[in-house]
Amino acid sequence: MDDLTIFDLYQQTNSKTIDSFSNKIDSNVHVTSKYDKVECNYEWLDIMEDTIRYIDNILRNPNRFIVNEEDVVKIELARRVTVESIKHLSRNTNLIQDYNKKTGDVKPSKILNINKEESYNTYENRFIYSLIQNMKFYIARKKRNLITESSLKDNKSINYTANCKMGSEHVNLQLMLDSKREEKNANKNEAGLDVLKRIERLELQISDLTCSQVYQDIHKLHIALVTSPIKKTNVILKNVNFQYAVKLWNYMQENMDDGIKKSHDSKDYNDTGTLKKYMDESFLLNYLVLDTLSNEEKTTDKKEITEKIVSNMVSKIMDLSGGNLKEEELKDIVSKQYSIVKYKTVVNDKEIYKIFKKNMDEYLNLIRSIKL
Image 1 (cartoon, rainbow, N blue to C red):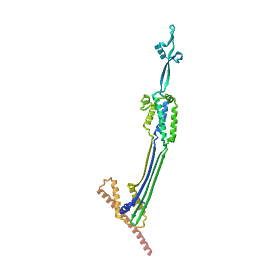
Image 2: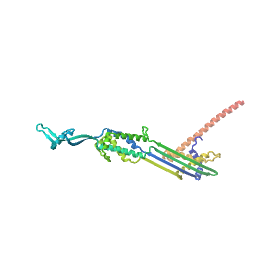
Image 3: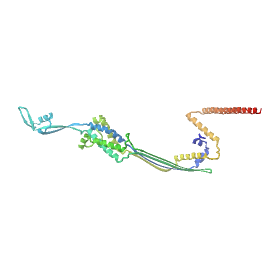
Image 4: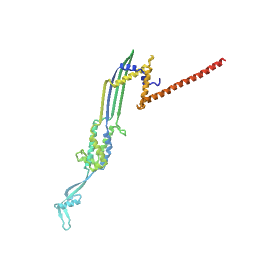
């Protein structure tokens, strides 16, 4: 009895009892469920944190070019006389004030002054300036609808009530199943910083970038921000730092949503389908368990139980053979096993008889010796 399982209990029950109970069940299944899920996507934050150092590399080694500012000024204001200045004077003799034929000295009244300056006003630098501006706009937009934690709430409950009348026996069952699940994810990085701390640190890093000389010079020019598509200049195509910057640019252009996905579902109904069927079958098993406490001796149809056991055995044999076992082969297997089991039973009976006879003979001999 210790090895008896629910399956065995079900198998040993008269099928008529099972059918009668199943047909007489009067049950109700009330189901309620509430599902709320919030998924926060902070991929943008990961990409920005990874790209910020490449932008810093660009600003530390900016692209630049030389600007020549030309201006004709009085000779006393000229800072530097170059070959270009002499050529300009030879083409504009009206600027010559005096000429000494003996010495060949020329005294101009005015001369071309060329001032050479480095400029950061390149397309690449304007692109980086625009990228930094877009990053600030993007972060500000994300912060307006910021949810720092992903969360999940999944609550389910089943209220099952049922009754059944088996002859003079009234069976009732009331069952309440309740399940609650809550999860939260603070979206911390490997360093253990939460989203707010990560954004705060990122904004500080961006603020440091805006203090660079390149950014300040471009900012003073009040240029129009660069827009997509980005020009594929040699620097942008070949420089690794710019490749990461372009990747961030494209990501922000393609992912303008808030990155928050919300799912909600709520149900409150009486089930009449599969769930009710499962619960009714569970009620039947519970009744069979309860019925084992009965003091009345149950009459069991041995032939029916035998047929069920044989049916299960044949099904398992067919499954093991992959359904390829022929009827004659099955009969041979059963016949051999029958002979073996029958022989064992006969042998066991003979052994018991021998042992019993031996002990009885010894006992009789002992009795006879006492009488003598």
